[in-house]
Length: 354
Image 1 (cartoon, rainbow, N blue to C red):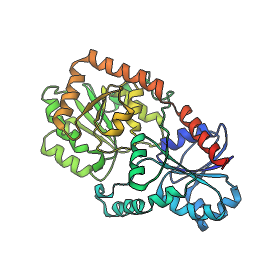
Image 2 (image 1 turned 45 degrees about the vertical axis):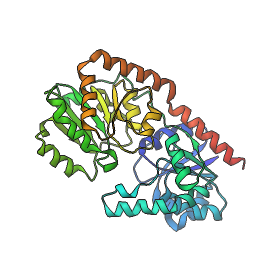
Image 3 (image 1 turned 120 degrees about the horizontal axis):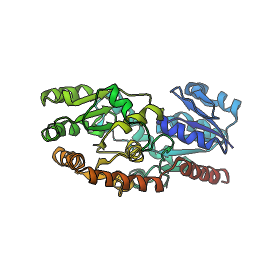
Image 4 (image 1 turned 90 degrees about the horizontal axis):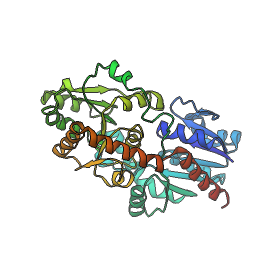
């Protein structure tokens, strides 16, 4: 089988494609420069030039793996003409009202309008959680198969050196880490509002936010207003497809947090748990589904409850160790990119027999 895999989040693309490539011929099309074992990576524009016909007839693909509605809008028409099926993966579902940038709101409004048609024309639809599966069924009348993401245990584990990032940023006290887009759906301002409550009890605590996004200026303004900038470290988006680098950030932390009010899965929280970090996440349905026995939950958007959970883990190290060890054990038993790849291959096999 020869597969055209159109990129999504770089770590998802890299980790899945390199495992699929052990069994089938995979060609990745990406807007990012990616290095993937045994896998050729092509510029996405090649596939979209002349509607994809030229590139397809050079490669003669048997199947397309599409990760967004906008990818499918460009590929699906010619795929139907040449009768090559596509698998569509729903990583979440569009919520345009939360977009504060007009161009992005228009982007997701278009996704919302076209979702049902794209999914209905797919040979198979995959959801990354039961939460996504339930919502696309309700919103668009689309049936799907759930396949969870995995963890690369080679890179994300408790044995990664702890001091590299701490030395780089001169961190001596407790470090609370989040890796996130600075976007309304990630609710980073709840973290900012928790800082005064935490440092009142733990004055040497530092909060590190790794990521970028449209709320960055609002975050800085609010941190200055609350006089907590000295406790906040803002790190711009690091190499997004590299497990190396990101694993050092997880390792440096004393605990990991996610304040999201909406997610499809929550890969960064899973990677933090795999790194042996006690983790706190909001009590939204996908987190309850994925991390039910792996971490602590706080009431969504409640800075006081969030701060209380942080202080509980910082002040009771024995309890924090129990949380991290339970989370690590459950994650090891439940999440692996090798298992994820096998499930995708099963779906491809089902499509090939249609």
